[in-house]
Length: 247
View 1 (tube, rainbow, N blue to C red):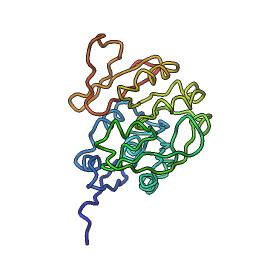
View 2 (cartoon, rainbow, N blue to C red):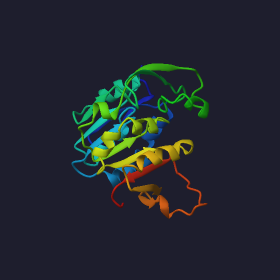
View 3 (tube, one colour):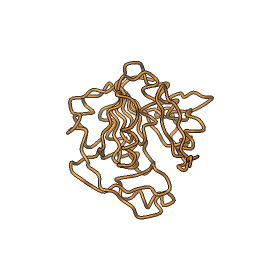
View 4 (cartoon, one colour):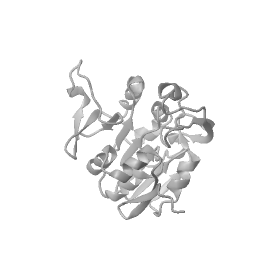
């Protein structure tokens, strides 16, 4: 019987098969023009080498290729998602079934049970997002650090979306980030972790921007231009952009 919940979209020339029972994949099917689309459209240039930490099924990796990236190193620790990432019909995505953190070895990743995104190494995450982590499910994953695996690599753009483990990624990449000071960083940081993570990133990058989405476009506002008591409202996940050049 035909599975009506299995569909695909094309990003560039590559098909991405979707499971429409999953909320975010259903959103992709409705339109690929989400926040990640507009960020990639504005920040990715032809020939860029991209690091995608938290690649999930490959949606953002394909966006980067479609906007001119020459290759994407995509990391996804959850086996079921990695298996889908690996099946994408392109040799320009280098897929790794690894989690990136501040140690080397193995650990458990907590699995979202209502979505197939949001899986986290952070043991506080299930308590903070109880609506996503309904069941106590986890999976053992391999873990490494940026300094261990990619210490000699240079990237033009780095996306970090690792569901509460962003600070650990930075801690495990001191040499890596010193080497990649010319990169643009897109990182998702929730409020409770912002100050610690921001302090680490400011060792390497001079400018911090908030993306402001408006009329199918995005502009970048320097975080220092907000008033001290001004509320920063995010339309979607709380993404920040770090760079050593003005945007």
